[in-house]
Length: 218
Image (tube, rainbow, N blue to C red; front, side, top):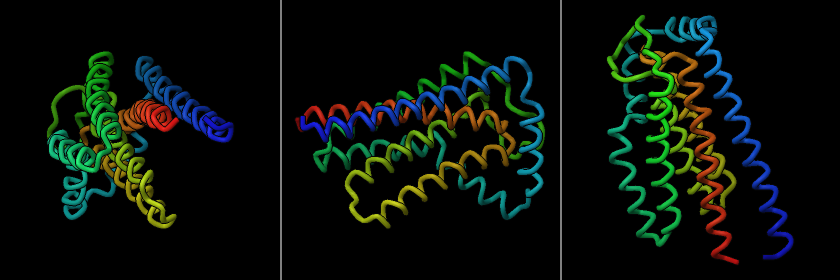
């Protein structure tokens, strides 16, 4: 490996480490406040603001947006995405993409059963079962769409297209999180913690993929 490549890899690892560390600290903060019953003010502030905008037209949109973070959606999109990567001879990208999504789902269920937080009971627009913390939709969406966007950015050369992919993925993930609060099935702290846990897991998987690709090129 050339010195320049090693330097870039070092910067990449440091940046990734900082993202993982910050994500873990954010998650731990919310988890600690949850255990100490200190999230009510935070949650009610954002719930009241988001749900103050409830109207029939927006509810239809929010129900549609939240489907992009549903298990059924990923059940369809994951095999399609992995198959396309394999077809394009991107074997390791397919492996890590599948591992990121499936591992993230298992990780989310583990966290839910550790904290066992019940879902909010006020202003419920749709019904959901299971525990609330951290939000599965939020965690799954940042892992799936984040990993998909990162993989696309590896093969896109146009700066404008790169920016468009990043913005679209980011907006979709944020809106999925907002939809969960709007629909009354998650507290804002559930969504924030889901994003934090998902960002940490996404970064770990991305670094793992990068390490494999670099090692195979060297």
